Amino acid sequence: MAKKLEGNGLFESSRWLLPEHREAYSHQLTHKDPIIKPVIDEQEWQQIGEVLSESFNEHVRITIKVFDPYEEIELSGFVTVINMFLKEIKLRNEDDWDWIKFNDILSAST
Image (cartoon, rainbow, N blue to C red):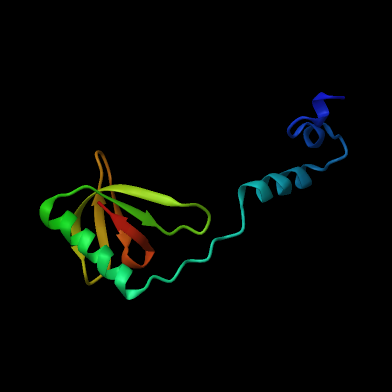
């Protein structure tokens, strides 16, 4: 009986739960409430722009915090392309690269 009270034992050992209920419970644990995107003021955008251009011009490694509704994502690398028309940057790390929209950037630091 003690094993059933540890961790998720009571839920997993129950024979009365339908597979649909077990799946819904698992889905609920993995999908939390989405985070609301914060509003970034003009001064912060100016600081982000300076860090991006410094990385592009002087090949400095930067760390960018990118918005995601369910988790905090930090990417690190070098800015290789700044596309003003599509409003995105190309961030290259050791073995891969990512296109990141300006609107998804929350902060940037060296």
